[in-house]
Amino acid sequence: MGRFVSIWFRYLRTDWFSLRQPELKKLPFVLRSPSRGRMIITAANSVAAQQGLHCEMAVADAKALVPELQVQDDIPDLTDKLLRRLAEWCIRFTPLVAIDPPDGLLFDATGCSHLWGGDDKYIEDITRKLQARGYDVRIAMADTVGIAWGVARFGNGSLIIESGITIDALVNLPPEALRLEADVTERLHKLGLHTIRQFIRMPRTSLRRRFGQHFLQRLDKALGSEIEILSPVHPVELYQERLPCFDPVATSTGIEMALKELLTKLCFRLQRGQKGLRKAIFKGYRIDGKVEKVEVGTNRPSHHVEHLLKLFQINLGTIEPSLGIELFVLEAPIIEEYLPQQEQMWNESGGLEDIRLSELLDRLAVRIGAHVIHRYLPDEHYWPERSVKLATSLQEKPSTQWPIKPRPVQLLPKPEPIEVTAPIPDYPPMLFRYKDKVHMISKADGPERIEQEWWLQQGQHRDYYRVEDEEGRRYWIFRLGHYHDKIYQWFLHGFFA
Image (tube, rainbow, N blue to C red):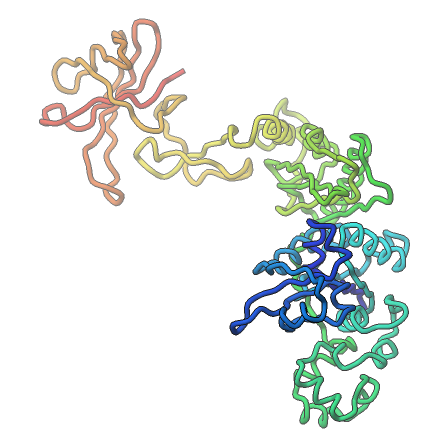
């Protein structure tokens, strides 16, 4: 059985306003919103609540009771934004944090509390840090979401329910602790059923007939008979390692040690599953709530600790620890099968299969950017600018062969027009003008005719020539259309080495 945490923000929105105006903390303060032609209270702080003010109460009546009452306009959608922001901040305590509208969060804390030294210290640390951020919270921990939720809002005494104690923790709570609709709880109280103990042993058929199937589902979820699935604010990565710190880390040496420990654990898991990562993200959760991160990618799946550590070290200095980092997380969102290549024992080089080549490309990509490193494969098109495509990785195999005829080392993405002087039809040109410079042609070879692909578009054919000017530079030029056509034009398409 798992362990779950429920956090109840008792005065969520008013606490947020008080953080920006600290003087409101000690004054009766409410938020208002228009409803049916009058202003009503939508949230009240602890001071106002102690003086009898509550939600849905008219602001005019509240001011009559508390003349010194402070009132401000409520902000639409504030609750959703606050809960999401707090949920993302709480990822430092567990990878699975779900929003529990309108005033709470839910954790799946299974296997987390031992990192803090036990349930008591775990809950104490969460409470202390949320209170330090200015929020009044009640936090409970139990074996089910339902019990944790009910104890956080209606429990007395200890809010940490020991593992294995389910019914005993539930029976003394009011029906509202089951997260039932208001009309159902009202009927229960009218029947004299003020605690769960009074009806938990009743026949299920009677309870279903009187209160509906949803009532039984809520009861079963609280007891653990029915699984309750949480929807995390951020999906949990399958390959993720976490390292919480008892004392915040603020040195580069400490950050590198944390990274190496996480890489060792993650790569061990990948190696056991014959997997390798193609992308990894190293995150540091700072005390002030900000998240620092460094991301690396690889050309082929890898679980080589030293290689990945070198990739991270290139940009590890960009992490700003500020007052300290309290949680380190290493994620591998892109995973592929790891196919170990036989070592090239007899050859000086292993070509594309040489692991050293992919590791070199990884380091270059981190330093200068992956967008400047390209590998091209032949594509099944006649038109030269369509006859190549970018490879997705070093492992991708070509679907066709490279053309036997020579092609330029640099192919322009779009042919550029040139002025050409040529003798009789189909003879190589004598000279051409490109960017206001005249190139006298000393050698030429051609023509090589390349037709349009009729299934893509209709148009004139191209007659290509390989030419060399007097300075020894070689070019790939073509004439679009027949020489005897009324409209034809010459273009420069590439440069030979």
